[in-house]
Amino acid sequence: MSEFGNTFQPDIKKRLTREVILETLASTTEGINLEGADLKDLNLQGLDLHGKSFCNCAARGLILENSNISETNWTDAAVEAHGHYTIFKQAEAAGSTFGATRNLYLREQKLKKALAEGKQLEEMDPNSYMGFDGRNGNFQKCTWNNIDFQGESGYGAMFDDADLSGSTFDGCDLKWLDWSKTKIDNIKIIIYDPNSLDGLKITANQLPALVEAMALQDESYKEGFEAEKNKQNPKNLMYNFFGVETD
Image (cartoon, rainbow, N blue to C red; front, side):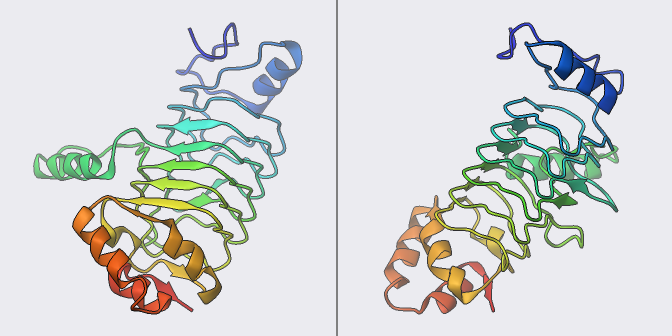
């Protein structure tokens, strides 16, 4: 049984509308289960969806600006947007979980195999957060798993003036993201590939928080990093080990 109990179960083959969601939220005390639902390009701006599960839903182009989505679960939801954005701008999303169960290495292997065999690539990629607009959002104490934030694409995830304090990034690709206007106090970055931070942009004031955030899983690389902490200034340390760019 779903953790949401006796909730309204959407027909995932049928597209939900804002009206259906509003009516269901208003008419039942049990709530609505949005797992697996088709929410593409839907405007849910300003709604209270606290604690809901969006696992496995199709969310490309979804608009959640000014919505309360705190403590929600987005595991294996497809939020990738090509040429436009999935809007989490100014959302209250503290304590939520984002990303995919599949790690980025397995994703890469699957993509390579598909290309080699001339197969069609996945229409919805839960690892990709291309077009994720999290500007001005509250993402305190969120968990981000196995996400490629697509910083090199020109439509990379945006976190300008967002609060990521206390969040954990586990196995994510943060290359070429701009965090220079993002609050990153007390974050943790679990790193399997040191190249996954190449080109990440921060300010000098953010350096102490980023240095402390590093949780390297490669023991030899970790030893080298720890040995150099007191020898190199933080700016050079983060650039030499990870390619992080500091203003």
